[in-house]
Length: 171
Image (cartoon, rainbow, N blue to C red; front, side):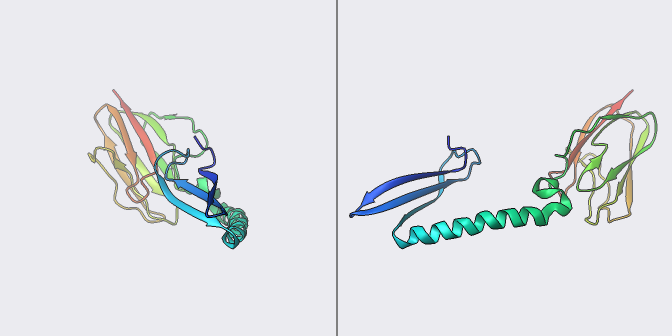
């Protein structure tokens, strides 16, 4: 296993010192190579310069993404832990910063949930099994679904499938 996703192995070929670089598709450094490059001489100097620029740009780009909480902040439903909400009647789930809040909610049968989009991006809520969905909601719009049948209903945003949450309906 290669923790930083690249293996560098010195090779001798024709009297030249060469470096063979592997990059894999798997973030743990496993799997088949996606890229294999043999470098030697002046190309090693160019590679070193490009690597330093890429590292510097990574820091700059990470800072530019702070508006949505850094790179991780753009992925919704990943954020800090939320306490699951247990409500006794109709309630509103807020869509903000590419996340549902509350992310997990428990309601009694007969409850109507309303999703209110406070993001600039459009969002919706669609059951994993497609049994219900809201319309595509623009900023300031809302959509509602009534839950009459007990069970657990995972849902997500079809525009941003990494946004996931759950409704649990009790008797």
